[in-house]
Image (cartoon, rainbow, N blue to C red):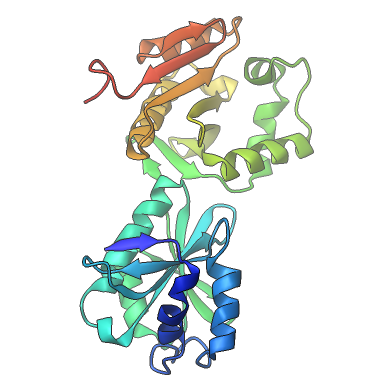
Length: 296
């Protein structure tokens, strides 16, 4: 299976999908060619598309998949497959690939479908999605894509939770460690930080023994950052999370990860060095994912 960006030359392929009354039975009225042209422009030929072409192992177009933001912590996934390709297991294979992509992107996965779409409901439940209610008369199924590190520590994709997170950044010592500032965050700064981290890479809350105690992020530029609230420091939580972010970086195909740690924050420097980071300048540390020492 292959999922790729669409091109203008995919117009007639797409039209063949969305003009078929059987394929569109639970979606909406079949598209005209003009409506398909608009759909291609507005949903596929974008810098960040909402839909992508799906191909079989021989490179033949079989339909399209949906992959785009849903809520801040979620990605909506789905598929529309040509009738000639029904009954070949493609929906399950595409769902597997889309879920894998959502996990790599640090997001939960959501499937929306008409209550009459029993086949979609079956596939959602097969992959562990749970019914989460309705939205615009559609059934919503949700898959939590947490990263479970061990019995104590779980990483949960970021969602806005000021009640838990804001107090962490009201600690002067934590703000000094993170940003080298002598004042605490206001709520707008907190939102801006999390909005940036969650839209430029993977951002997670750290859950320790059922309680949220901090956050960890891996940006698209391979930069790691972590905050653990003061009362939960020195419990090896940060070490476990950083090791897991190294594994995530490998999964994403990165060749190194880096961290910016202020020179006065010797506690964090020691922790990063203990897992294999090497100091490259006064405040930068790197971990190579390709050399013989660190590559599995």
